[in-house]
Amino acid sequence: MEKKVRVLIDCDDAKGLVYKISKVFYDRGLNIENNREFVDKEQSKFFMRTVVTGDFEVEELENELKKVIPSDANLNVVEPRRKKIVILATKESHALGDILIRHEAGELDADIEAVIANHDTLEHLVRRFDIPFFKVSAEGMSREEHEEHVMNVIDEQEFDYIVLAKYMRILTPTFVKAYPKQIVNIHHSFLPAFIGANPYKQAHKRGVKIIGATAHYVTDDLDEGPIIAQDVIPVNHRLEWREMQKAGRDVEKVVLSRALNYILNDRVFVHGNKTIVF
Image (tube, rainbow, N blue to C red; front, side):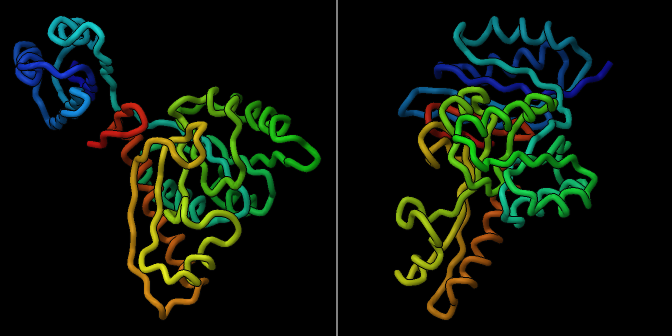
């Protein structure tokens, strides 16, 4: 029976890898629908994402590929499927609302299993889309206690990724460790220049000329995880800080959506603290 898979390979670079890998596909009568590769010359690392179709068994294809790539290579043969996400939010609606609308319109190649928030501000919005909403208040709790309750709710869901849609709480190392390379965050790109309350007001006073957003994987280093997607837009002296904030939120929505599209379609390789995105 004909199948379609995404073959993801990263390993130490070596001569002839593209030829050897492609020959495996050719010898098995598979059709290459899409292929991208990249060599990080500084690290001498090879990355390749190939979409192939044909009549084959996944395990047999994996075994054939392992014969021609380095023994320590990372190899994943992934059959495309709709992935599942859990969203964490607080009070800001723009990032969450955009994801909900894209999901409703069929533009998000994933199923939203639940939205979890530490306030009930966004519950009415989420309920409109028939998505389960869970309020886990942090009132009177330590960060660790609150996270334990949040993790209990998360672990009741079936999910591939956790999306922080302006979840305004700093995650502990325990939380991050529990979901390695599964947590995606979005923030404005003023960091580290304007930290703390109302960064747009600070930026306006400084006369900033561009604003933007960064989507990244979450690590223990606050807002410094591997970057998945970024974008900027120009601004000028005519904009008040509230107008800059509105423009910044628009960029955040677009960048988060773009990052999710990359991840959900297995287009992101993580290498150290950077990404290769095909």
